[in-house]
Length: 182
Image (cartoon, one colour):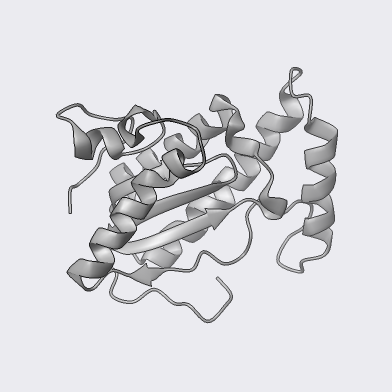
């Protein structure tokens, strides 16, 4: 991760944002969102990642996470590296992807412009971790994360957005990802 923001205490919840290069609406397709969820599930089960809240928007992801056995920065690196390769491969192999050439050109240009990549760059480098070490920060980020789908016009109510932990927080139902409440 580059930039001035750094992960604090790994056991404390952190608000993270991953953004697709060029703000491309890759996650307007469920198949790409499902690949990201698969990676998050793996990190929960195998790498000690605790997901407290999450939302996948069309071109970015917000998470509130902590980690017990690993560093958040290491798990994030692995998630971004794995999902970058996997989602680009899905795009390349998707015969119904009408935006394929356009997206791959942007990812290729970004990759060639960044010494940290060989071919493609999918995610922006930074993910701006914010340690949620006060109740006020925690509450503000949790509401912001869940209401993002409403503000963007995807749904009328946050709990109706399938790719979010809002249903876990606002109802007794379980969402698509295991969540440990804050």
